[in-house]
Image (cartoon, rainbow, N blue to C red; front, side):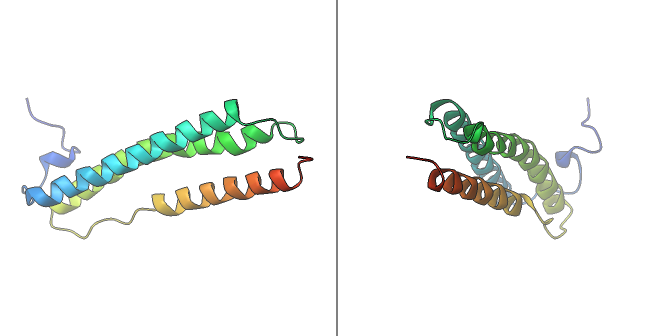
Length: 121
């Protein structure tokens, strides 16, 4: 039973194992980061004290959970794209995931800071 043609491991030639392992470690690092973001978002929505602004905790926590889910899915696609490029001896594809994560985390931090400053505590 063969692999589907779109499967990253079914094309080209086997790359140096070190590169495949590095690609896998990068994928696992993204998964750990995704889990951390989802956990932080859940903790913020459930454990952080209420702000004077209704829904303030959700305004901070839900984007972190969402970007964690997107990161988990996208990191798998990126792993496959990298594996395929290595097997075909092509340049590695660009990933926009770091930019997206940086922007969402920065926005959540900014919103959190604003809510704390303008909270009556």
